[in-house]
Image 1 (cartoon, rainbow, N blue to C red):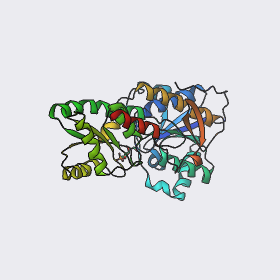
Image 2: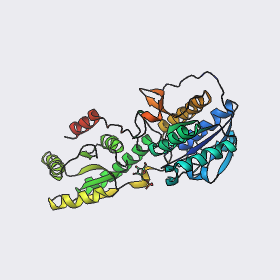
Image 3: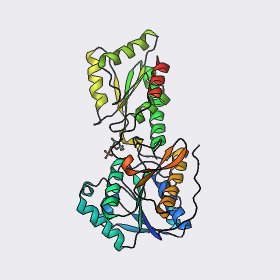
Image 4: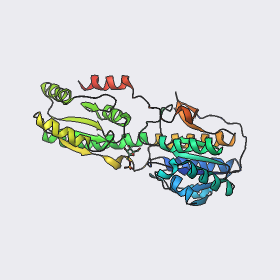
Length: 333
Ligand code: F6P
């Protein structure tokens, strides 16, 4: 259970802004709600920025009241919309963004997003001395120095629900299924889904397996009397890896069906876990910002909220749990 920190009430600023950036994740709305409501309770006004850094540059601001965030805690996506902004890689663009925020009387910013969004936030702060706190929101759970990210639990649950359905067909037709999950270049979703979905094996970028090894896993199952198999595949750099694997398996005499879950994992109602996580991290972000902290992410470490400098987060890779990987193989054999 996540421990809720206690903050002494300090208020350095009276006007802040909040945005969501990068891929949407279930629970982002719960985080926005928490940022807005907590800031208002502290006597601070809140501006919403639509469409991430792109909307900031286009000055797409909306006022946010406590009532603006009513009835959104259960909604997937983000009411503030989101974007991946190439232009923010440029220093001059970030200066323009800081100027816009200052001209509007905004004194601090909360960015809910992933590693790319935090990179933009880090440079915005270091080059322009504009205070920013990040909240980790991504289904991938690939952000360093935080055990959890908003949206991961929901995405994993959605994928496991899909696997439970696929298993009915796999078992009825005696088939092998390759189920491809998201996660970009990391295998956190795949490993969790493989474990929770009872997969035969998990193919992740962090631990390469040859076609021969995958065939051996399937054959081992057949020798034990199994007539169907579920193999979870992390998409890796590019979606479609499972289709390529299926072709290679076919050449070795193993027919398989492919199901790419894709963006079904990004949408939908957030789980209770993600709503609570988002609520605690959103409020914590505001508390740290108002206390004068900046250039850092609020993360989860050993069930506690931690404030981690962006420079210790961006560009670092979070390792998959080798113990979980080992256990998932032992339980499947
Ligand atoms: O980062 C979240 C994520 O869903 C990744 O798992 C996936 O690789 C990527 O975003 C897909 O991005 P887009 O929605 O822009 O295609």
